[in-house]
Amino acid sequence: MWSRKQLLIALLMVTTGSLNTLSTKWADTMQSKGSDGVLRPFAHPYLQACSMFLGEIMCLIAFSIIMLYKRRRSGELDDLAPLVDNSPSFSRWIFLPPALMDMIATSTMYVGLTLTYASSFQMLRGAVIIFTGLLSVAFLHRVLESIKWLGISFIILGLTVVGTSDFIFKSNDDSRGRNNIITGDLLIVMAQIITACQMVYEEKFINKHNVPALQAVGWEGVFGFCTLGFLLIPMYFIPVPKPFGNPPHFVLEDALDGFVQLGNNPKLVCAFIGTIVSIAFFNFAGVSVTKELSATTRMVLDSVRTLVIWMVSLAVQWQTFNYLQLIGFSFLICGMCLYNNVIIVPTLQRCGLVPAPRRLFSDPPDALFNPTPAAPPQVVITQNSETMHES
Image (cartoon, rainbow, N blue to C red; front, side, top):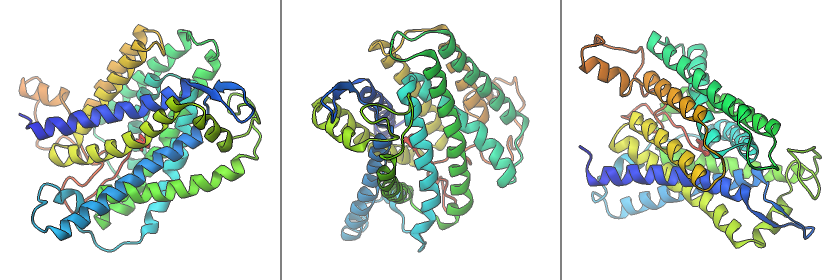
């Protein structure tokens, strides 16, 4: 039975995680006057990716405050100690490669989000399990048992159904054609390859340093924000066609026009700030969930977040209901549960329908997707980005 504190952090994770995707999509649906005085939709995915990294930087600020408070009031923060345990000295530059991968993946996903549905965006991110599993075999020398391959098969089937539903059912939004939706879906799936590379890198090279998760997320946010913020300058001079370029200049990213649109629409500013704040609290809540409960619980809650996003998208009429998405989502949930040895297999074992082997997997079920240290000295760090880490 969960305590009140555990219920609170679980609710915080689901709420802030859902708000992160919804606030980003809300900004995409709003219109504002740009630098040329013309009213048009807000389409600045790279600028939105910068806001995600700002939220991650807030995690580093929170980590520093907690550490300072811990030093001043030693012994009074036992509950927070697992979040901020002192770690051995390490070079901050080890976070540069995963930050760059997170930057590419998040920016690509946000471009895809401007072209497709928020629910599809969240569901298709489940493809990261496929690529992480394959890369772990190649680079971490893991041996995936048959149950994990079965889970991957279900995930592939679910992704196929979700993508097919976007192709078959036409959007009510006349400005978003079927080709744009499929392009957005493909970009989101492709971004998961980069995210999987980031996760494998973190497990291979960062685990040994036993870095506190909040600190790791914060430093990746610093490197990601500085890099992407600098890249906004050349992006202003790179011409691209529709749907990747938008008026008035049809360049890869017109950050100046984005700031003008933000200044002309207070609701747009609220959505932008919502992305920053929600990703910060989502990362903190995710760390707390893994510490207080488990990484598999975090995976289940992330699935609940997908369901919430889908229901809200239907409620605000960002998309229409289609049964194929529900079927695809069901396959995705089954696949994730099978891969992570959650709910399905343990239930069958308790009922005596499946024998309970001494060890079902060659690695702990949380090994790839534990976003924080389940127990020292091993640490596995992932994020929403939302960038999983969204992020």
